Image 1 (spheres, helix red, strand yellow):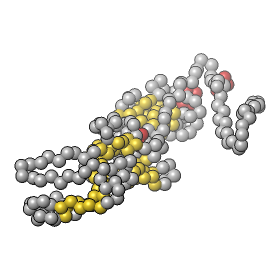
Image 2: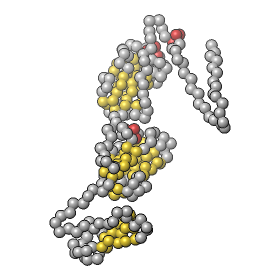
Image 3: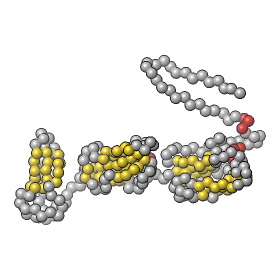
Length: 270
C-alpha cells in the first residue's frame, strides 16, 4: 500500500534549504495483536541520556536486575532477554547514571509486541551538577551545547588575561574548541568534576568556571602597599612573592590609558 505525501513551502527570496521529516501519527493496527497495546516509548534527550535497546527482533523479555531510578555504574547489568534461538542475552548500562526502565515489561513478554520499533528497554542518564556560586561582577565562562570537555588550561586562583584560553573542548567531529576569558581577573570558581569526554551539559547552566575581580590584599603591620591609579593596565611582574627587595627595586610594570609605560619600585627594604 502506498501513501502519497505533498510537501510545500511559501514563496521566498533567494535560495533556501528545507529538511522535511515525516513520522506516522497513528499506530498501524496490523502491528498490534488483539487484546494487546504498545507501551509508551521512554523519552530520552542526548547527550546526557543514552538509550538501551533490544538489538534483534523477536526477543522475549526475561528479568530486570535494577529498579527504576537506581544509580548504576557503567557496565552494571540492567536486564536479560531471550533471543529467538533460545539463547539468553544480557544488557548493561552504557554509562554511569540514573536508570529509567520500562517497568511494565514482564517475564515472557514479546518485546516486538510490547514496544515500538525502537525497542527501548531502558535509559541511563548522566547526573548533572548545580550552577557555580558566583559573586556579583564575576563573569561566567559559558559554552554552547553539543561540546565535550577536553582539558583545563587554568587552575582555581590563577590570574588570567582577557582572551586567555581557559578550557579546551571538542565538538562531535573531534575538532578543538577553545573557551576564552571575556575579561582579566582571577579564576574564582570551577566545575572541577569534569573529566575528558564529559558533555558540557553536565553543568546545569553550561558554565565551566567564573572569572572575577582580584581579592583585596590584607596588609600586616609594617607592610607598604604598591597601588596604581585607576585605568592602568598590568603588563608584567618584576618581582615574585618571597623576593628580598631594596629601595628602588622594580616590582611591576603598568601602562596608562594613553599608552604611557610606568614602573613601580620598592620604597623600602623588605
